Image (cartoon, rainbow, N blue to C red):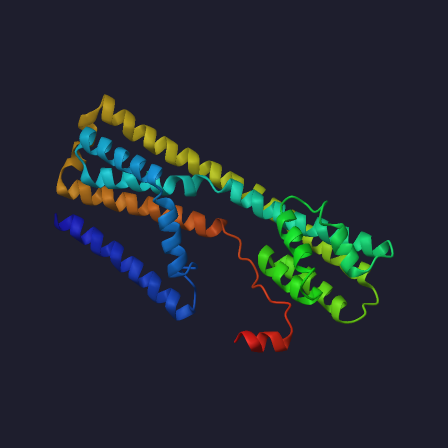
Length: 286
């Protein structure tokens, strides 16, 4: 037991040293705020997934008699979909970026056809890309009873995308004053936004190999443990003791840390959004 205690203390000392180093160097360890972490936890504990986690934990406890194994099985059911999933969310983010670029080109083409700015935006209501069509429709409705600058500012908040803020800022400036080369500016913005979308696609392709390797490793480990439990239970007898359970908890903590680091690495740091509202409006909202 003293060996297990020493190993646990050594692990905790390593974590403490890492946190001290991160604090001294100003490195941000936990990027999400407490409310974000709580929201993710609540999302993970959906009724169906919670029931599956309880069932998995109970099954492992009955088969192996390991309380730590039951806890790790339940945690794997809860966190597994987030670790191996998220593809739809990433694809939706890329599609939203491309939709902003396409809508910018639509507005540019309408302006080039000798249309005013408001008429150009109105012309895109029915043909806007599906990813932002609802926001464009709301923008057109707001333009009926709000100034164009206010409607555009609200549109930027609805889309909530840094690239959309650039387009909103350009259109807001054009709405307040005469723009000499609006079509050229929108063309450059659309090209830059499409470049961002291509960059995200390349990043996703590069990270696919890491995600595939992670799935293979986790699958092989899980299958090995299951086969040993069924075919050669005596090989796992060492984990029946309290010390074995402590070691199993340490192994599970290592896997959990690796999964957290993988999730942290897979998240793209989005630039901070800015508002296109005027200085007077910003002072009024304080």
